[in-house]
Image 1 (cartoon, rainbow, N blue to C red):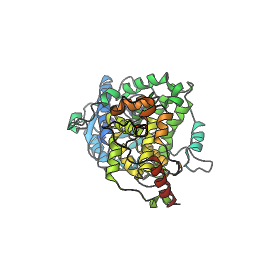
Image 2 (image 1 turned 90 degrees about the vertical axis):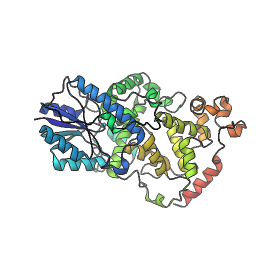
Image 3 (image 1 turned 120 degrees about the vertical axis):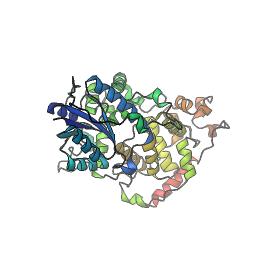
Image 4 (image 1 turned 180 degrees about the vertical axis):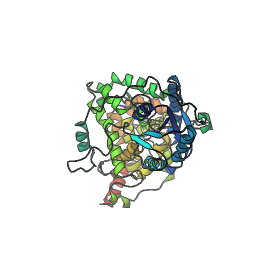
Length: 450
């Protein structure tokens, strides 16, 4: 009797506990269901869909090399998985457990129809398992990290299966091209393919490159012109490589700073497990009364990278062109929207959800609330990043030249603040608001919620 492997954000063959369990039972039917109904307004954004298309194509190729194939269905997960089970006479469904609220709902719905076995494997430790001495979940990252680190290393990763037994007959499958996951009118993702190689092989290629760079991560992650980031985040989000594989590959290579960032993924999942609506509700209720501004013009200027602050504009343009933004610049751009423009952090979270190839419900919501100061573990509201100072401090001149071509010919001493230097080109906008004015306005708004 065959078993179904229900795939979601776990698109890999190695260290795939659901696949390993299904193989132990006999023939395997790997299934991916494109379910936009269950998450409703949390359906994947456009950049994530681009990544998903290429990741599924890569996974199907890998499965076929093992004598298997990927079955694609579109609709509600419980309904489509039940149809597949009836078509092939499947006795069980194996899946890696997910913690986003819509996936938890989907798991409950599937379990009502089929014999669902959920396995852990997308995080260093199962979310909810790292608790205080009294058995309560952590709300603050630092003690969470200390407790998690005591449980490390994670179990050794499972090997890629040598072969995957096939069922006697295959169920029908959608064609990937018919899902229209790729943009066409217009194709705004033309630059994505130069930046990314979705799929398990691409993930391990990226990890191989980072092994030699991880010792410099602590400093390099803050330097946009150097980059310094691992760029593993979309591969981790889609489960093309497991965090256990990353941990074991990097441990012992002066990688502690990076491993703490890897653990942040676990922390974010623990937060959304406690607070499922964290992307739409302030972690601190007192901020519900904060007087946000509603300015479509300012929001659009931020989205388009036309704020007059070069480091912010470079980051927003990099995001649009590549589906990704440098780590340090993400914080600067997010802080600018929230504190300088006084626009609700949820507007930024929604934009990142649609435009990031690594858009992750837990990370995205936790990071935005951390910058905003509204979260359960967050910066103080009064901590306002100075983008002009940050740009010079972290030597972002070449980064700005790459993404803001209007400023390419400016010298280093002027490129961070062309207005102040008196050499702003005609084609580049003036500052949307002065830093001092924005800071005073933000501090005044913060005083209203004390």
